[in-house]
Image (tube, rainbow, N blue to C red; front, side, top):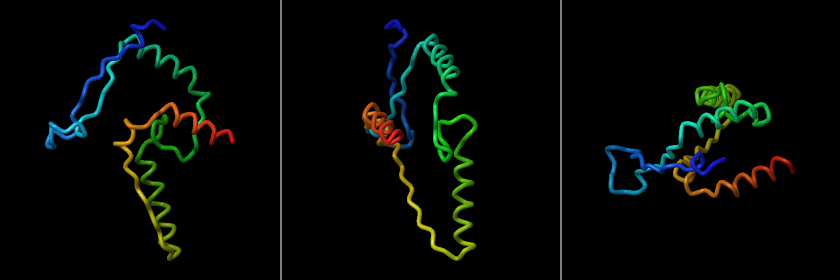
Length: 117
């Protein structure tokens, strides 16, 4: 692909307008790409989607899935344990700040190794 299709402009977008606008942690980067690169991306995703495998319990970034289904699954699971008079322990992790600090190439390699081992 030509460089013009691969180049993006990074624009900072404020997360919390009521927060400290002088703090770098209050901004997230948005990559603005060309229209033609977005069209190519949509075409490639459409053609490759059947080959992309995910786990059945993955809710985010998956067609026809959303957080409402995840919330429903958690509620049903908690209710099941409560009906059986059992304890329920949960842990929620907000990894939103970690996303931009993760080496995605290494993460992808480790995920593939775990997937195929």
